[in-house]
Image (cartoon, rainbow, N blue to C red):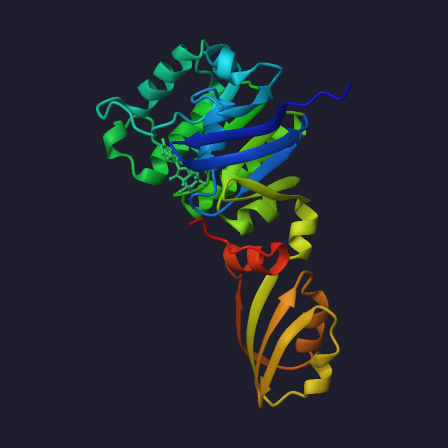
Length: 300
Ligand SMILES: Nc1ncnc2c1ncn2[C@@H]1O[C@H](COP(=O)(O)OP(=O)(O)OP(=O)(O)O)[C@@H](O)[C@H]1O
């Protein structure tokens, strides 16, 4: 039988009358970077808490590393890399003490590799926790998650609030973990993060999984709003025939359009002219949800 690192079957969670998670069935394989993408309120944190055994499902079940989080949460959390729920800590503790404290609770010790991870994130571990910015606090907890030699890391919004350079460090570490055959499971509300990093992405909306896409499929669906100015007027016919170009508007030397997927053909045509200005914007997750999955992107 195929070994799955994470498996959920009809996993559901209701808070009073609100359904936060609605019959979610997922399977995550070893060596994957698996993303759960969804807007605010989609149920991402609820899913992570269920997988870590911090809350119990109303219905359905989950297995993580073969353990049932609802019954074996403590044992499971010893074997998984994750970021503590609250993201807060004793304010007077220095960064190194925070890591040492968390390591003890997980029965691992700090090694050279831990300090190397902290250095990669640019963290000064001699500073007290209260002096860290929110991004540095997030990075400190990520060091704690990555220092754990776990088969799977389960991370709720790991890149939210991180500086750009720290986001790059996170992406590099995630790929390294994958190269070692280990698994990263993380949530995000950023389409860009999901399509750049993930092998597979579950798209969550109002507690339901709309689809599970390969990262490459999601990239092919990427929409870009393009605005370009040329030094001289350009002809409609040059651009109108491009297969993945939509909503073309041309006014003298100013072009506006929406590009789907690979920008190569468009850029080759555009670069026949001198370009004086260029803006590329990615539409919101909401628009992707509406266009491809036929639902309004934001939970009520
Ligand atoms: N403890 C709780 N009690 C009541 N309702 C809750 C609780 N936790 C979550 N919810 C509700 O469940 C739904 C899903 O919330 P959840 O935090 O899982 O979403 P999310 O995708 O993580 O959103 P965000 O990006 O804002 O964290 C929301 O409607 C939220 O209000």
